[in-house]
Image 1: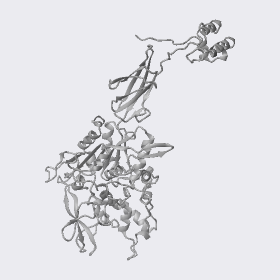
Image 2: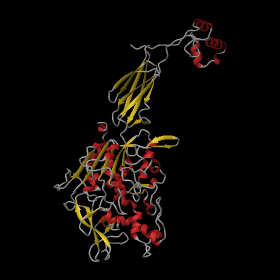
Image 3: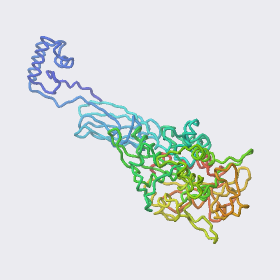
Image 4: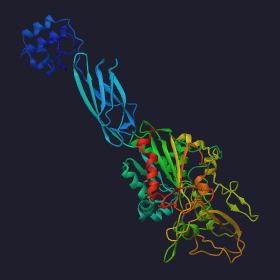
Length: 593
């Protein structure tokens, strides 16, 4: 049986729970001038309908009396131990805290899950419990309190459980100016402002459109729970600290949060800063890195900026840790396809269409180069400017397209292969790790890894690597091969073919010059060879490795999960089997398994 108690002590006019001479003075004042008292004081002074001598007499008989009964008050909310923002919680459970009278018994009920918990309020009047949350819904929490006198109070709160945000780091050459009218400006400004960048239309729709739609169908709302972060892909991912130890020690919280990013990783840092400042419920993220974006993701995880604290607007914040990272078709050992481009052969980036061949890299390089050479303009950037004098060959006195390309696309160095891929005149394969073209980023990121052991994965809760191999061509029906090795060739002036970006079409390289011929084509996803996709990940218990293939047979040394969808580098993220696998790897239901 529930009871309602009127706890008022006759004569306690000032609400102090005891009757003193001050209360008698207040009653006397009210007898002569009721307006001299507050509304609460008048209610407490009056027993029989008006403040008169009977009220004074009753108060006098209670002079010195006091009561320990207090009205039962109850407030409840999300506890400070659970990061939240406007009722949103990103965790699988939430601390619920109640404030009520000391000793009162508090009942907590999550009506979404049916979970119940009881706790008596401590001497500081608080009670708190952890309740599981129903994923991706509004959880109604009923909190009730009852004291020894039978007083009862009820408070209801709502907790909106949202999934851990997914951050997509897109691939190389997929970002550009948000407004295409700004393309000329973009071409002449490396380190383009983050607020003017966007994933370009074709990549946004064809490469990442199905992925984002799939995530939305699983409850990840665009702009709230899933994000794609464009960056200036022409810039190096991170600075070289000169030490091969698996840690990017020059990437600090200060460097990654500079207003003007000096490296591509700064765009991710700026985004994460804005994310946690806008929504303090976010303490971890899931990160999906496609192609070069996988190297961006690993660079953040393996840097000193990872999970670091910073101050903004007088408040302390922390960059999020990564709960689950998925490397999607990531060139973890680099790719041989980038080496000819680094040496000004852009043919690997040409599309053969019905009427003509379109050279994608030439679209970016040629207009900027012409303005520097012919119009005397300079390409600006936070890591220096590119002007005619800086790319002029001191011997010939003429602008050198190769110097321009290697400065303009400095990021190509981060894609250089680190495995032995280059066949020399003696027929043997070598790497370029000791040359000026060496990939310092990957040599550092992979320094402590070996087959089956990848220590960097200890920095995340869950690591996944997935990619396609040996895809079947859409039109030919034959396996599509991937450039894995190249031959260093001295041109005879008649045979061979390269496509310098400044040329309108492929040419035979001049006699005596060196060029790089595709020497062997092997398994991969048509852009990244299997040796780089698999890297050192196989047989590592800390990583789930999932290769996919749609070929009719598996070459020696390769195995995959069969799929009918595309497993090519760009089409990989439109494959329904791959998308379902990604969702399972980040599903809230399995997050704390």
